[in-house]
Length: 173
Image (cartoon, rainbow, N blue to C red; front, side, top):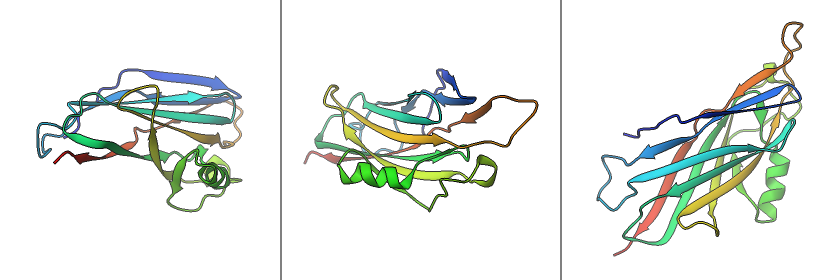
């Protein structure tokens, strides 16, 4: 089983939009076939930029990784709540220029407000970070949706759940 530890929650406020993210660490799976798998994997997420047009930076650090060759493939399955969306046209442009490999699992209405939208699943391949050994990163542009007007509230809170992490590492023979 994975164990995770909620370390902190960053809150960012701009244009009446609050996005909350968590930093957590995964422990190794007890069912791994051998002892050489990572003893610890750390996933860190940060929201960059201000306003309704933000970037979600995800970094994965594999602390110990022995008996592997050629590195690893790292994929995250991100569930964006109804208050956020990833623009399929922007993702296609980033993919075309080799900047980001991301896939939306279903069509998205980029014009719909939050109260008429549903959550959105995005699969994102992380690339090796040249400035850090055994680190992988991806920056996904996300956009805030308009929320239902309210006379009582001037802000809306959007909470991102922890993404699912999938690792594939080649074993040295």
